[in-house]
Image (cartoon, rainbow, N blue to C red; front, side, top):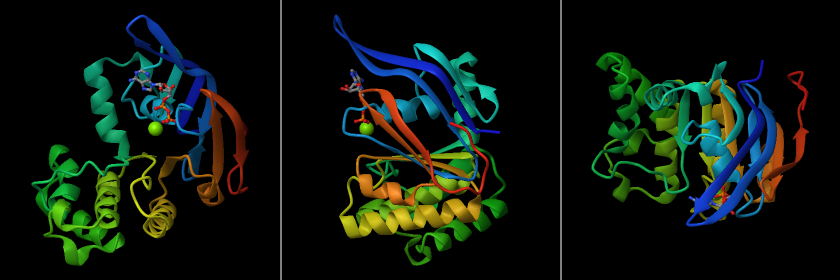
Length: 235
Ligand SMILES: Nc1ncnc2c1ncn2[C@@H]1O[C@H](COP(=O)(O)OP(=O)(O)O)[C@@H](O)[C@H]1O
Ligand SMILES: [Mg+2]
């Protein structure tokens, strides 16, 4: 069963009296335990699509189903609760809390979820080790490099064991060497943690890393390629 299903989804932005169509007639399935890459040029609709999948925004038309829940039907409160429980986010600009240490940033979603402290400690230490930052646990974001900040953000996204992790151009603010290392890390953690990972990029070379590759152009799906045959899938 797919973890995300979009049917006939449309989304427009209104700026003063002008309507900008951002997504048109999107039909898409995203499968569990796979690394899905959404590629397309700047302005093609990648962020809008991830915001709909991530329950940050709602479609104007069509239906969005995540982890079996028809999310377009939820109230705002129920939607943010659903988001906190099921979805982890990784952003282009890392979005770490500057006053918290690396450890505290990873711990933060677990505090909000009222996870007991001994369980939190074990999970945070395990994740900092998984992203290679055990020795930086007490550093604040300002004392870390861009690549290290993104590693903290990856650990934070995984902390609550979400079913789905969304990463919107997570390497756009990194040099290409650091960006490649971050992609490799996400690829490895996706396999180890068996999450469904959706990654957007305007860089065509990350497509090599994808199990499934979705190309969008002018707000429409231009192509879907399912690369590995581990799961039976349909477009
Ligand atoms: N908040 C907004 N208000 C108006 N137009 C927007 C807004 N966000 C995005 N757009 C427009 O929607 C289209 C898709 O944007 P976006 O999803 O950000 O694309 P991408 O992430 O691929 O660069 C673009 O034409 C963009 O200018
Ligand atoms: Mg974008």
